[in-house]
Length: 381
Ligand SMILES: *[C@@H]1O[C@H](CO)[C@@H](O)[C@H](O)[C@H]1NC(C)=O
Ligand SMILES: *[C@@H]1O[C@H](CO)[C@@H](O)[C@H](O)[C@H]1NC(C)=O
Ligand SMILES: *[C@@H]1O[C@H](CO)[C@@H](O)[C@H](O)[C@H]1NC(C)=O
Image (cartoon, rainbow, N blue to C red; front, side):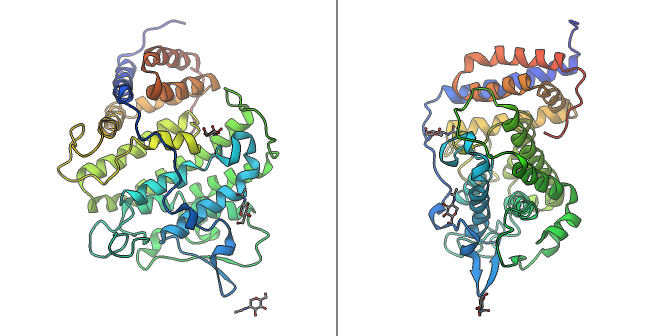
């Protein structure tokens, strides 16, 4: 069975090692800012449809930060009982990654109008406004409104007596959809995957409060898989749809956005648990402001060492995957085909944060899984 790895695969692995070494450098630094926190203005965000009623109509405006975040808060609320088992006080909910990312986008000014033609999202203007010209806010629409409508379709809000209306933005109306029927036409694959995720959740028995076991039990792993499959599909669809929005932001910021989208494929393949705690831990490595045309990682002075290195690492991963025409991702995905492989993948990502000495042995284990999984045809997550 032992064979030499072809050169291309070997080079992909070297790139991966380089990437992880970058991360390990990061983590030798003092781990400041590891505090966990809720998204900005969390306490002002409505957690049920009652908060959206205007004269007997239920109206959600996804172009307002509180409203869009409200969709997340409601999703966390209505799915909580299916995920008791994943962690206390809903901290294990598989959806936490989405609102926390959105909070980071808001906090760092990424939802504002980048053209400065309007005051949408500007601190001095309509600070809660989410701009339709922002690449990040358009990308996020497919990760917010679409999941919400998926939950509506799966029956999570069936007891609500009123019709739920999603407001369109003032411009670019055709880039988005506002109800389940239209979303099935605009982005059928993505819409179907989010609905499937929520339907699956409904079918699972309501997990009882239990101890967290170190390996993810099959049932929980399925929930993560459905979520990541839908998540990856949203990003794929949105990347195609909104590439022209990248022209409004600086080249380094656009490059970061693209490479971040690429990294999500790798994270997804491990079924990584982006719950409340984990997402907070990882998110401190993302740049806390938008990148300027003159920014060049790893020497951006006003960003932390960690943020600088994370940018470099994301870039290496993106370039490495591009250079190998996607073979790096394929290598990774095949290694993640088995639960054992995904476990090693998650360990690798986690050890990259806390235990760099385990990185090389980790990569060896992943190569072993790659070889063992030779019959596997990887899926989307
Ligand atoms: C709202 O609905 C309630 C009962 O469904 C009704 O009594 C009331 O008149 C309605 N109000 C408006 C403004 O339509
Ligand atoms: C969901 O929201 C309702 C209404 O605000 C609240 O009473 C309830 O405690 C929330 N449930 C969870 C699990 O957070
Ligand atoms: C998140 O962290 C809190 C505080 O340390 C802990 O009690 C909780 O179990 C953690 N949740 C998960 C899902 O690991």
